[in-house]
Length: 183
Image 1 (cartoon, rainbow, N blue to C red):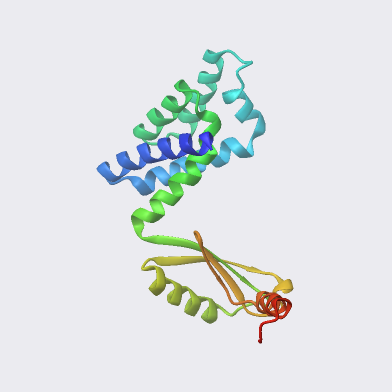
Image 2 (image 1 turned 90 degrees about the horizontal axis):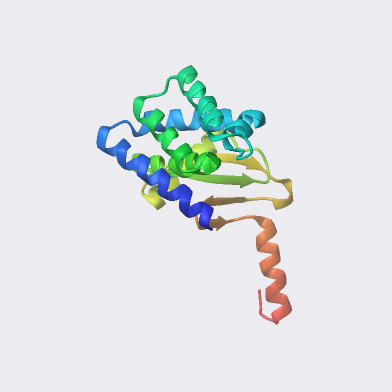
């Protein structure tokens, strides 16, 4: 839980800067590319985060990354601040939380849609539009298939779960029958 609080705090700080200077989307892209690079390259992550290496060597590695990728001045300073505060190990979590904040700023909600069968693009768009009306934001759907649902769909937007699957309906019917209720 502490890790999430740390990631949230640093992501919010960067977002405040992004709102102020209008570069929130630029920072999202830069932070995302650097976080992906560091998480993809395990040796690079160890070279920056492992306290067994001396701090000046680790900082040189980070500076080399910054020089190579040449992010904005704010992002360069931000990465060095994370390093100085011993928070580089939280880079991926900070990036993920920053994504959520940037989506909120743009009025975007991300949702998952799981269906029993493959859906047409028209159907996905209709569902996306209906969800957008319901939550009052533009909804971007991540569509997956799960044949175990038997039929129907399950949609998740944050804490909101809309379950219209046949599997759940059958489970609910079974529970009702167990309790002796009429179906």
